[in-house]
Image 1 (tube, rainbow, N blue to C red):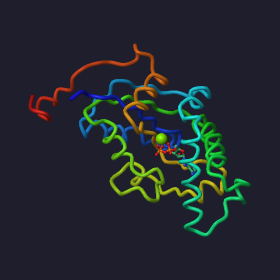
Image 2 (cartoon, rainbow, N blue to C red):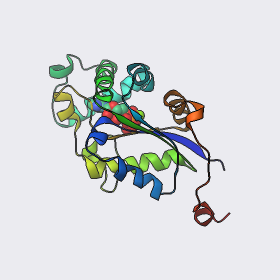
Image 3 (spheres, rainbow, N blue to C red):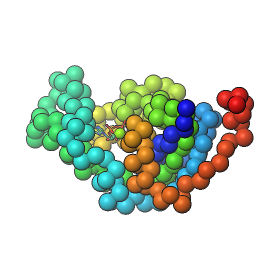
Length: 195
Ligand code: ATP
Ligand code: MG
């Protein structure tokens, strides 16, 4: 079995709320190795490239709104002027570009076995209201789709975490240069995995 890398971004709301230490602690205590760390304003081009420009991704994001609005008998046309999932997804992406550039972000590369499952598990559901207590989104936020969409903004959910191994590799290459990543072994690995 080999270790894999994932990108985490503590989004502007997470940084501005002083949550960096509390969030990093969770990834360190579960046993992942921090191999890259970068703080600063996100660059627009990087954010545009970060979130996919594909109909599949737009549809997934738009569908989240449609499902939530259907459950609450709300009409997306008031906010989005459409009930087409792809079009809604495109609007959310525009909002994300502004959100990411609001104030500084903390970008982190973590490495470990099954790293994607771990970072997604610790981050919790995309919609903070649905995120389980104990997860980062569940413990530190309770935003909802309808509140976010009504205010013409994306969900403020504190953290980004890569959701596949392939995306993790792509995202790490996008946000970090090879020389900004460091390889070392945590001293507790011998005990965690009994090599
Ligand atoms: P991330 O990629 O940020 O880790 P995720 O993988 O859980 O989150 P995605 O489907 O990739 O979720 O959506 C990217 C981000 O876009 C979400 O984290 C959230 O901030 C925002 N978002 C997604 N869907 C919606 C929506 N329907 N309305 C508002 N914001 C949304
Ligand atoms: Mg995602």
